[in-house]
Length: 85
Image (spheres, rainbow, N blue to C red):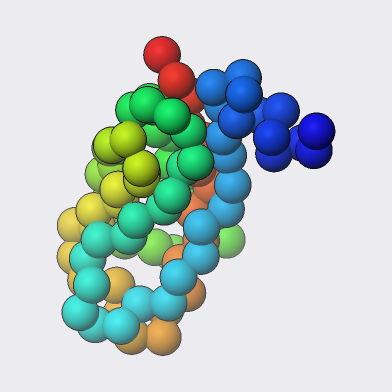
């Protein structure tokens, strides 16, 4: 069993999501891989000047909603953690 499989079985998943702004999308979907709806924790990378955002989760994804549209070409990296209650 690899590290990711062990994390998923424990009700815990984490990663880094990266995407490039396109002047259109304000929402980012991050697949969490857990069975159920986790509690999401999402933070910006320290070296990132990303827009403000809020996040929540459903049974498939962590949903990140930016307060304003990320500028085209702006690379945004987010640290994320999903924990089953």
